[in-house]
Image (cartoon, rainbow, N blue to C red; front, side):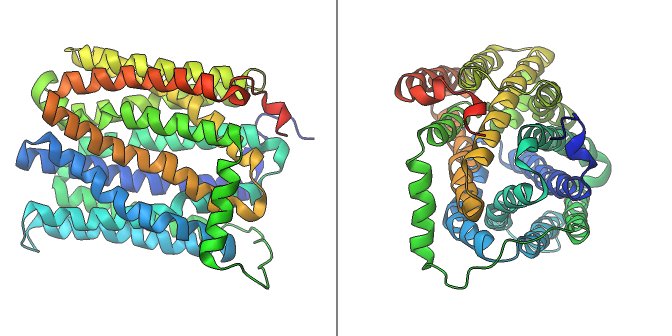
Length: 408
């Protein structure tokens, strides 16, 4: 067994897979921060920010189960290339709309965002399925940590790039940059030499196959609890979606401040991912996961109560460190628990739990902010996150006692 800490990075295919991940995330994060800034600047309504999440998550929900089925039954690299092409189209449409070349109301901006939701349904399943093809099982923990570092690095850079370039390039120019980054993904996938699993000669009906994946997840207490914990934490603690409103109404900063706030959680996750890559958690993994999500809730409360820009950024940085533990633990549990022939479907279900919760959380927080105000919405969400942790600890004893060595 190769015990070198850098072993996964010596794998050319794994490096190409990381390139695929970082450029897809950079693209849609730049789109997210730029679209959010533009829509709030035009409307001044936090509920309109929440609608961005809703516009993305509804098509995501509709497409994700079928995306998982396709990833399990079709060449995964080619599906990834098609998804990257779709990801490049969205910012092109937004650039045309915001430049005035296509006339229309602010509501038209939500149509390309809906396309992003459809495309993103393929990105996670393709990544997770290829991950298991390029790395041996004994490198999954370190590979998941490195994948988290890359993911969170893109989450740092994407909002920062978007926020910093809005003034010099203008809104349409930033959208064009996001389109170019999505096209780079096709190059990384084209350079990847990876064997695809043998195609099944006799395939199950689509809905029966999707149901099989769902039964696997709902019958696995540890995996189900980890997914549910992350989903509800992000749902109730998604204060970052309200960052444009906090910048405008409370913290009094410009678009560069929005980039800093949107990047702070990911910066904390990068720091935690680097530490976990060198010091992977095995024993008491479940307890670490529960404590990390509870810490995330506390950070959301601190962010909601803060009126100082850099203190708010600090709380978001700490929340990212807590979230970094959660991301690595959940990803490792999923990779170690899932049979290879079901990775696409299980990853899609993971996306429905976790990926969609960001967008649903954005809609929830926008709605709560409209009803209660910005600060009460965020503080209540933090307390609800901590309640989710307590409930999970009681209802899922296998997760509470989890040692990752038992899954290997």
